[in-house]
Amino acid sequence: MLRTLFLHPPSWAGFDGGAGSRYQARREVRSFWYPTWLAQPAALVPGSRLVDAPPDGLGLADVRALAPAYDLAVLHTSTPSFQHDVGVAEALRREHPGLRIGFVGAHVAVHPTESLRASEAIEFVARSEFDFTIREVAEGRPLGEVLGLSYRADGRILHTPERPVLEDMDALPWVVDVYKRDLTVEHYAIGYLLHPYVSLYTGRGCRSRCTFCLWPQTVGGQRYRTRSVAHVVGEIARARRHFPQVREFFFDDDTFTDDLPRAEAIARGLGRLGVTWSCNAKANVPRDTLRVLKDNGLRLLLVGYESGSQQILNNIRKGLRLDVARRFTRDAKALGITIHGTFILGLPGESRETIAETIRYACELDPDTLQVSIAAPYPGTALHRQAQEQGWLGGRDLVDDRGVQQSALSYPHLAHTEIFDSVDAFYRRFYFRPRKIFALAGGMLRDRRVLGRRLREGAEFVRFLAQRS
Image 1 (spheres, rainbow, N blue to C red):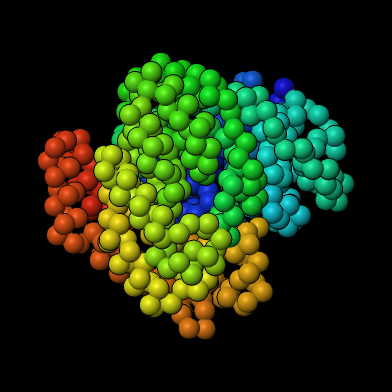
Image 2 (spheres, rainbow, N blue to C red):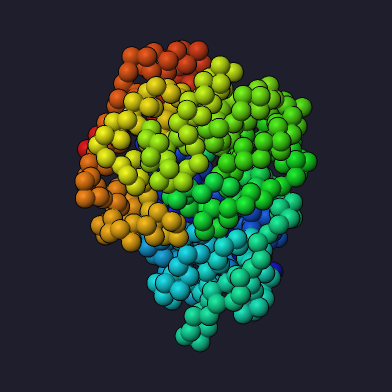
């Protein structure tokens, strides 16, 4: 077995490379997701080590010094960070010329040949699901015998056949053991989650067909393949023993509520454990299911509302009606479930009028907190193909040289600068209302831990808006 380093490379300060589908950029407040996509193959490779540089505050010099201790380094990359990550790979290779280096992630899955051509330091890239692909590489198998791999050999770039989609999700070992071994849970923070928290996946794929969403269209697939209820509940029980200080568990499946009976069964298992938990949800969960989840420890739902325009929701194949989302929101609030809503500006069909419509819609729904993103046409998505066909791409990167998200799309009737500026307007209209200020202040007064976090996050948020301007 090769001595294997799994590395989430250093990047911009505050860069959140874990939230893969929408927001690989600096956030409004310092936020870090768990590197679960790397932890999963790390759990399959005995003696490996996972290093998550951004939340640990590690720079290039720190990770370069690790290179001599390993035979194989596997780096997780993304479209916004790819060129930066190539530089990290080249630095590792200079430090240890014999080090074998491979890249994983949606970007290289979509562009395997181009990724390998980017640098001689990259020996291989893994396409699609890469857990068992990487394990076989770490076992020392010849690259030509490993399914799902693109690699460099004798100056040529070769591709092995695709690896079959993993159907038995219980074949994947628990990631919380890797978290315990290699990560510091206190370094991971998300403004709307209790701190410290732990996140993991209970399945892969999403039944929705949203044109912008990266993972279902590249790595996860659009069938929801799930772990068994017992497997999930067992891992949370293990996590409780590993991390008694953790206050909340988050299920990062694209849409945990895609399978309602399973979600209810997991909730009942978590209820017996007495844990607090949260998850991603589509804004169409019926009230009866919401009640079961709430009665068994659910605290928060992260909900992708995206837009207040029904036409835009139709354009992106969201499969959601505004009236259904309104009813869902009323039901969740009535049951005492906290909502973090996410919205996207600049999707196909956007105009000054629909932006104003979405801001009004968000204020009407009044989720407890929200996040406003700019539409990001990631390679490999239907949105990217549509943008190429329609001429909406202006040659701008998804993030600027500071790691701040910018609008890569522009339309004849709506410039990219207007889309960018509308994010500030959205945040100010939503958060600077007296009703919202009083609600946030009330939460701060009720919990001193919340008070300290909100004061820090508020300062970061105001500073972020000023820097964008």
